[in-house]
Image 1 (cartoon, rainbow, N blue to C red):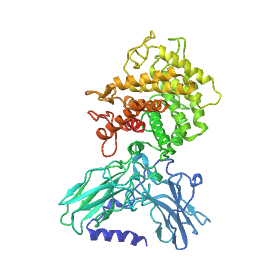
Image 2: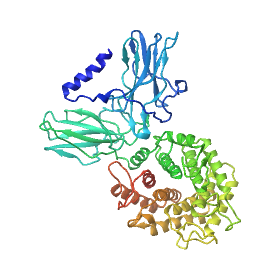
Image 3: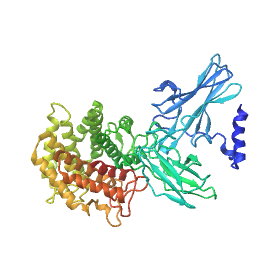
Image 4: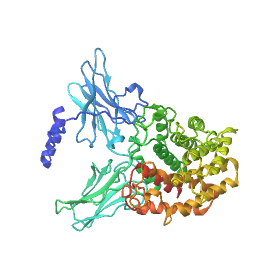
Length: 595
């Protein structure tokens, strides 16, 4: 049996003229971490199901076990004798090659069975989709079928029919043929070839790493392939890219379209591309601590607004993994001391707002409790002995600035609005707001300068959009708490000033968005923060002009600042230089949600 297993593929390869290299033997396995790391004991599995039929070898039962909640599997052999063995094979290329003998275990002593440890089905941190099978040796080798050869999202690979039809990228041509990539309303994709001859081939390439590597899918001599998924949520894989390829029967050359992701729903497509960069093993977007708080807040805002639950699992994951302590250099240049707290007071407050949003999304009390813990820490840096009040930006008490007081007021008012019978957080929010508006940081043009000098005057520092947005958001949340029309009027004035003064051709523009300037990793995320606060203001006022402004931002982003993989850049007008990374993606998502 073992000889036949290896001879049959070899004979097929010889006949096709594509002999695999000698190195196609089982490869050594590098440890993979997703929700858990390879070699977890099955006693810790959250589930135990059997996803493929067992195999029987000389009366021994060889089984593959799956815990879908852990996204891991293990193998067992039963009805055996001493020396019988069992292991897992894992393939990263659809079963063409594999890492063999993973967790190999032999039946000991007087036992009649044994099992392996657990191994991951996928490697989301490195954008790899795997297959696993259980193998056993009992006087001959048998292996189960591979699990899972098909990716599944709204439907599984190979499905039909489509629901709608759009072409996310231009078609390509080859010797009079037209080869096109299609997507339906669910994000399933397929390829077609037209204008050709009998024997022409068409297929899809699918890549989980933005085109660096890929697998061929659905190859056919018909005119269209089946439908294939661009995500595999069960394996925590998002942001898959596909392209349509074809070959004319009359020649050896082929042609492919550009890589693309589905783009039917703007905000959903942006969220999918943002999730591509999330790392489940470490539960953040590396390598920015406060930016990760804002990115998960942007995703939660999208889920709350749309009713989608696609990524709700990352709320618990981000909270659970990151609630503990980390040395300096692991999650931040500062030590994280537990409960998302560090010497950077503003960083802690960003996480406080994230857990407010998590509470609003899920209703789970643990998130509100964590926000209280963080807000209590932040309020500990309110200091009336300097400038009559305000919250210090850092533990060393070197600077009072707009971002920290804006966060503090918003966080305090948010807690009051969610804790029945509260007066403490309301008093803190009102006191903080009154100090902020009298501090001089909000100038005569209703634009927010960065902070105060040592002599408690405005430093006339850069007007950043996130400071402007946080002042709006603080006022809106305080209005919800107090009903003060004066506070709401100030929020409107701040928004109107931003729309008039912080735009270029009607599009929100950061000071580092102009000329040859580039924004640092912090500023990349600022505009999206502004847009989420403006959305809040639009909700409480019903003012149509704010939504009109938001739609203009979204339209500009989508038409000028997006590539075929739905990656969105720093400059919402699409001018260069235009950085693209997960921070700019989270920022642009804020604008798309606001629209």
